[in-house]
Image (tube, rainbow, N blue to C red; front, side, top):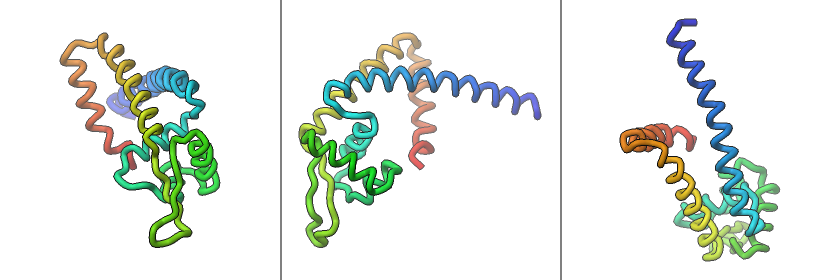
Length: 149
């Protein structure tokens, strides 16, 4: 192994350690916010997907986005529907298709949690100077498209 490869691997291992701590911190803060609404992290992720879509998702699309079986996705939607965060509707041209819509209450919850995330990020960014803040954003923007595959 070349020295450069060894340095790159060591850097990746350090980033892995850092990501574990960052994820734990963000998920714990997120979980505290979600606990008040009795919403799990996977349920919140589904709400997040629904807020970014211009149209409702079919149950098949929900399962695909969540990387779940259709049965597991149905369970998520069931719980969110009981909390009035989503609603189901039959497809207009095919009654066998079930469309999942986010409700205004669901959008409100996502926006609240997102604002808490922004607050947490701003708190972290206070430890960086302006050029470091810009570099952090620039790096994440560069790798972001590769995370959505």
